[in-house]
Length: 81
Image (cartoon, rainbow, N blue to C red):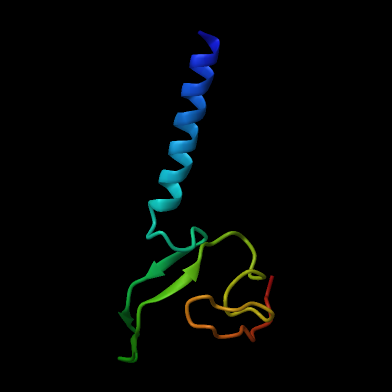
């Protein structure tokens, strides 16, 4: 009986973890899409992918040493924190 409960618990945990990953778009689970918008000066900004906020800039796509997997662009900015 304990083995059945353990197997069921593992199955549910595995299913939940997969659902979180697939829940986005099947792409990078550490990023999110940003909708296009118009700046106050009238310039339109195209939609883009950004890394999820996490308290550091060292893993952002635009930071020096990183490469944006969506565009292939190499980062050039120095992190502020």
